[in-house]
Length: 449
Image (tube, rainbow, N blue to C red):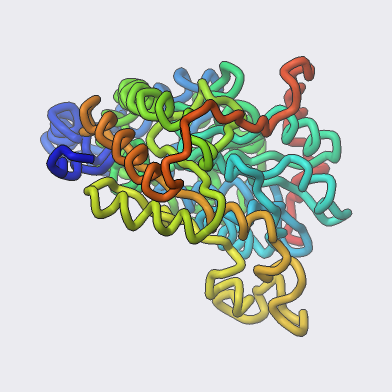
């Protein structure tokens, strides 16, 4: 490249889009002096910010039940508990996923069973058949970094085995798969408003489902076993009370989250346009392969991935792109679960609570790097190019030109030619997956295990 280095654009998604809309809603809460969602100054009318967030999220997703909670991690723990998953159970979790995907299962008392990812960096649907045992109760699907997993084959494989499907949409709100938003394919979904997410309130989360029983149990779990009037107005209480935790969302958090939810699709469309501008050029480069997605059109578009032929070439790409002021990285806050300390020790807060207690030697097969050759290979060879709300078309063009220049250096000036992309899903002729029946009483114990 002969042009001068371009300054790095300001990174960030929802956090970079914070502005007057968030300020107005937060000030409304402060001026009313009503920070708690269930009661304020008027006994006859509880505050409405969290309730409005739930209502608008439900409308956006086309689902009847949405619950606002304190974090995405809390949402995962609540959904697992609401589904009756606990000691003695197993949950299939992609090996390449965020900390909470593993720890929330451990905290429920169940055992996370790690699965390989495919080249989309999402759960390989074929792993469900390989890993299901009589103890398997659920599959946790992570829509990794803005891109939908292959939900049709996943749901068919899981529901065909009687497994509950949980969608982790923390990094992919607004993404779609075959025209349907992520979060609407499984039995329950979680969303996050943590700082680095496409929507942010610093912290906070949502649970979404079409299952009224799971919704009531989730409400009780997040509010000390209670089922207050605003939720009873949505669907009457049917469950006996049980001990719950405290994972409520405040009105202040809900105010920021609501403003962010209303911006979601605009932010997504901005990122999609930037990504399309770059991929049109990168797809012509030999020797690198764009991350194949289950649904290219449905990607949020805030992070573009390509694979190099070897880890060494990927490292060279990252070093040279970084020198050109292009944001790029190998890890994006996600690491293989089997490389985390809490997996390598196999411990819970109390040793008796660990689902791995008594297994020796540890780490056991299924929790070691050598057990995941595909995940190891893929995650060593990718280069990630993040995009953001404040990136411009000129920034996108500079990123594309930088990759082209580095490619020319590393690949010794090989002539450009189209590179075929590998499909990661079943053919589109596969019939749509039927929704799983509502959570029944024989699937969720009314008393402890």
